[in-house]
Length: 183
Length: 423
Image 1: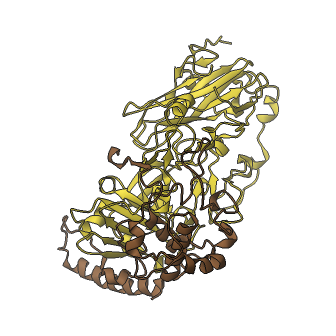
Image 2: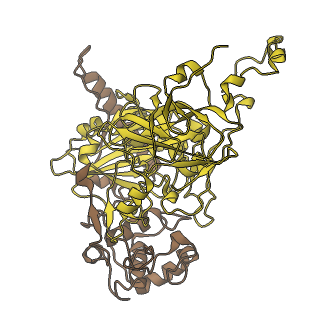
């Protein structure tokens, strides 16, 4: 279902609920709260909720290998990320780097990213930059596998799915300090 | 003529802030108060032409006077690989007060500005809630809203200065990823309460409706505290480049987490670990560990006039002014130095500062015509004092460039030219 149809349907429903809520509120009551959110189900959000988290939540069915991903990558990613992920400008480098290098370290998927799930999540929501969300879930798994392979993190035929992806320990997985408790 | 005696407040010409009341200075244009109304007084004091004929009538949309200068945001050169991922900076050196006009509020996008018709836009709350909900824009407008004045600063603001180099620039080019506005919207707590947050929910993953579906995770404590789903900015519907029809607004925190074009809030046990909270917006330290979820913007101030790339036309009295802000509370005081930090004088705050909002400071300064280094140093209500650049570098190095809140030094040479300097 397209987003606009989805929105239109929810909108109709929310109008009805709004009318109901206003009708239920006692006249002149100071305590009457406005509650106009349309009730929905998680099922309705399939295809809308794209959050793929490190615990595997939000990861769709499907799987892919780097060998399969090479073809998708060469077709959809190569123009910006180059043949082996070496990129064509600073922000497009996705391979290499060493956090312990003497100079300011090159931070890439391989050297920096702490979670493999982020790779799937980001490719599915934001890539390719000229046509985000145009890859199938299967293609996203395949390209994710290929980028991990280019970084030497998995083998070329290792199958990547929601379980195997979230089990991967990234090279810099222990490199982060969570400061959220301070705020 | 009565001989004026200026009370010195610090070395190299800083005057007691009380003198502002007597001087009535208005910034660079009024330099040299004693020279006001010079030889041209005779012609100025005639009835001008515009007082002799009626002007045009009311208009549908007001514009600045053509004599007021061509105020523009400064856009970065677009990356040809990724043209939607850019920024533009506010012209801080030409603004006064603490509110940035909407058309001059800084921008930062990760996949361009989406053209959203609110009739096709939904705000979904799902995940660890009793009842997943979807709100239309029209229905959100029916909720009780609050209005709050807050600053917004990109955590990458001023970042280039940490790495040093010949950073010749203006207040705008060096620090313009900062703005202030009144934001009006529905407290996020109201909407979360309607959905019924389950006890195990610790984070709210927020997602925008731009092409990147940019996402950030907000701790539940913050989400239930002062976060807004903002619908209006300075009284008008939020503009497209600020997130129309709605954005998250997390007061005091790095700009990126105030997710624009907000379309989803998912309650989760753990952070979603989005790209923009792992690979970006994290701070790598000298030991190569990286700090994550470094949300608040530190106490900071900046002299906006006189500032980089301006010229002092002649020795005399100038109004030094700027803005100060802190993600940890309200500004308590701002001090100004004209000798590179050796001596300091307390500036006047133009109005009572409020939490997580810009404060405007001002102090008179008599430029002798010699070399000077102008600095400002802010202290916030939590007792935090803005650090010098060397202290920031010593504490965290320059691998990471986010969250640079160090003192800015503007060097004035004996010709009156002003530029960024490292002291």
